[in-house]
Amino acid sequence: ADMLPVGDSVCSSSVGAVGRTSCPFAREVANAIPDDAQGGYEVNAHSPVTGKDYTMKCRTEETYPTCTGGGAAEVHILR
Image (cartoon, rainbow, N blue to C red; front, side, top):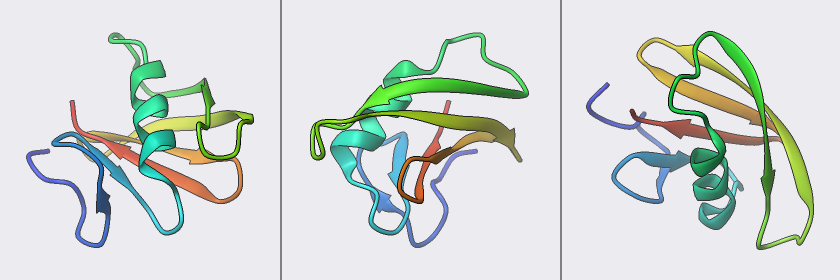
């Protein structure tokens, strides 16, 4: 994918946050994804906003990973 989905909060050139998901947390999630990740997997990420750790379930959808979890958080990552 070359672009983040329409409607995302653009946190960086490769990270998008959906809805109320914060950009600091979205970037933490993106940084936690292993370079060789494929299919479905989980990552643990810390939210600088809430001060809590969350387990995010990720899956590669279309051509970019989508991670969901926490309080209805959703993050898109271009790779």
